[in-house]
Amino acid sequence: MNLKIKLFTFFIASMVLLGACKKDVDETTNPVVDTEIVPTGNLTFHLHTYIEDNEVDAYGIEYTTAEGRIISLDIAQMYISDIQLVKLDGSIYTVPNKSILKVFETASLVIGDVPVGNYKSIRFKVGLNSTMNALDPTSTGDSIILNKPSMWFSTPVQPDGYVFMNVQGSIDTTVAMNGIPVPFSYKIGTNANYFQVEMPEQNFTVLENMTAYAHMIADYSKLFTGIQLNDFNNLSVNTVGDNSLPIATAIKNNIPLLFRYE
Image 1 (tube, rainbow, N blue to C red):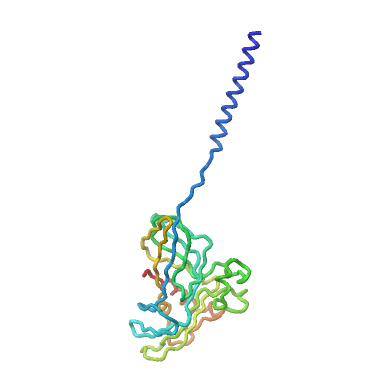
Image 2: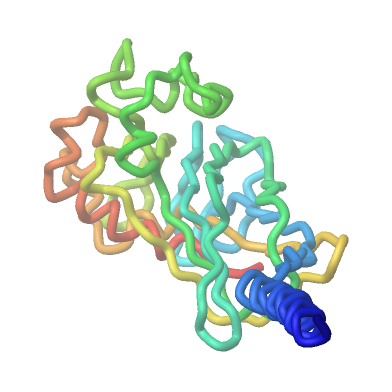
């Protein structure tokens, strides 16, 4: 009888021990993971419209460049998307789902919350990615920036896609720069002309619950770099077909030249 009691006691103790071991294994293989909350601050682009060193105060005003050429703007707007921040170590933070229509009348562009930290540069694209470029302007949450006929090639907007940059105005096209300004119109678009801008390195810091401003300039005089202005054919890019011409490629390649820090 004593032997049976001893065996039963040993059996119960063994089961308790095994249960304890199993619990230890479960807690080890399935640990509770705390979700890390990344502190953020707000980032805002402050993007001014310029003609060389002159800030454009209103449409239709004539400004003279240092070399003596007169330029005025009647419309200057563009889509900005695929915004990326370059950290000091070279890694990239991509701002999710952010596209903006930059119009002359608005200089402050709220990018949104981004991780706090030290950054050294900004990248973005002028235009819209191929998915967004194919959207109907009235049946999407992005209609507030897409339903803008000034950024369409035709009515309806599809299937041609959107105008990525619409710049119109007048410019003196004479070699001597002593003539009467004549109209120009550039509507750059199509998926082939979705173009990246990489700003120079300039360190900035985003602090928690505070707004960091990136002060930049879009100097539209740079759009004419290397363009033979006294050729009338170089003053107009207005259709999808025009966007496959060499002048459209030249204008597109000049777009990164527009941007500098204030």
